[in-house]
Figure 1 (tube, helix red, strand yellow):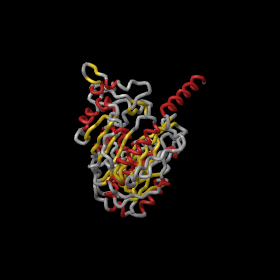
Figure 2 (cartoon, one colour):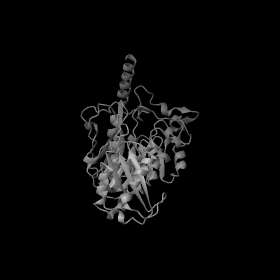
Figure 3 (tube, one colour):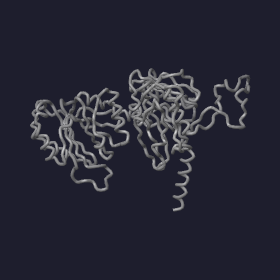
Figure 4 (cartoon, rainbow, N blue to C red):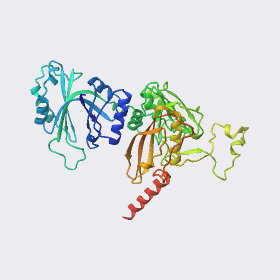
Length: 446
């Protein structure tokens, strides 16, 4: 099959291949590539696709993809690249009378305008006869010089590789700005940033007519991004104040509904509800095409479930104030108890195993203490297969974006299989704060 060059954004390097694979499924475009040739230090990856039209379709909603280019050749030097190109002049013969433009880019270094012009002029052997057209040309030739990662201590004076081809399409990185949390009418202290919310929507295979659910909806970031891609979405949370926007957040008092109006997505977000996911009202059996969520870790907001601490008055909810029973008051908050992180994840897998349709995906964040994570920490389930597990580090801790796919109907009472050891996310809140308190102490004594 023909070769195409994927030009990734140099961000979230562990997430790039999982998103690419998800786009292949979403767009029904089979691809092939050698994973051994992928490097987090480089934004380039050669893939095989059946046609240029399918390659252009593949990346159109990519968030971590800048461009896709019909690969014509590469070389360690321009001379080596030209030698490669001249072996097959038929590649450009079809475009000799078309309007055209050249785009010259570099990874790991900024090029001057003089250097860009010099690079363009070096392709004069192609003898393009058509008019130069800077906007909407018939064909756009793409040259990129690769120097290495931008933070390389000693940048190279000359590129280590030069890539060339015909630019076909670009990804949807403009959506990062559109959904920038700083521009939202309503946000809170746990609002997920736009880029990763969009990546999660892609890995969840959010698409028209799919039904996506967030059981820890918070301020509703995933409802926005999944519904932007055409899915119907809904969410729930044990704390209705986050949904309504009455919990003292930085901006907005209309809650999630204000953001839905801002982005014109109210017709795709079916509803939000307030209940404990452990006591959910959903009918038994498969219901959702995807479950996308960021369970509360306890760092900025702790997980809770319904329950009473020992010693609490069990009759409190039945007390009558001004003729109204407590539990019937609009401002009544039912009693809750802490929900330990490893229990949250185990219950989440059990819920997904029942409520996802076969082929549906669970996409969730798993926090972990840096240096303590072990692949065996991940709970498993007989009907759920791990598709991707990507880390976002934060120094003393990190979080992992875990994507799982339901591969078979749930049989009987099969439950999530929890690790026999204490995983790195168990009692995460306590371990997080104790770790950073220790770091603070050491820094003051040095």
